[in-house]
Image (tube, rainbow, N blue to C red; front, side, top):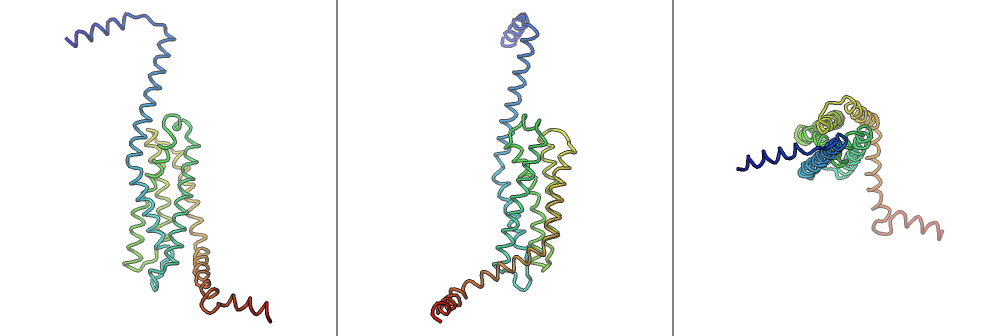
Length: 236
């Protein structure tokens, strides 16, 4: 009975005469509804796993930070660990924003189909591939006493760039060499800067440690050096 009713309804709809303009408008409306539905589905899927992906990404960069200035004679030096974690989290933040801004800027058609949040989540999902490199760095430093964190971090940055481009291409539903070039350029730039300025960062880490160790001597027991100098300056 239901199939007969459906056939009758289809015949009645087919007998309705509409102009070509109205038909085109209906098609446009249908396409808009499909795009909106696609946006909702994509946002739901991306939001579903975004917190887990974010957690593992941050954990990976923290793990890299613990090994970046690793000293086998002082493996748990709080200054080396703290400064390394700060540098790696800063690197994560800069990489994320450069990927997001450039990929959104050079993919205007994708931004119309999906929201910015979907692009951002895709970048985060690509960046989580730093995890195996971070795990290798931790095992190498704390188990095997190998200080290879800088090499692995540079390699992971290049890998993350390719992965982020792949995630954006998957989101767009087509392969685009443009996205690979953009992410490769950003990754190579950061990898080069990290390698070039690593010695400067090591010196900076030493200065930070020296500054923190100097503070107790300035304001230590018995007045400290600073207060003695002030007393000599004022009364002698």
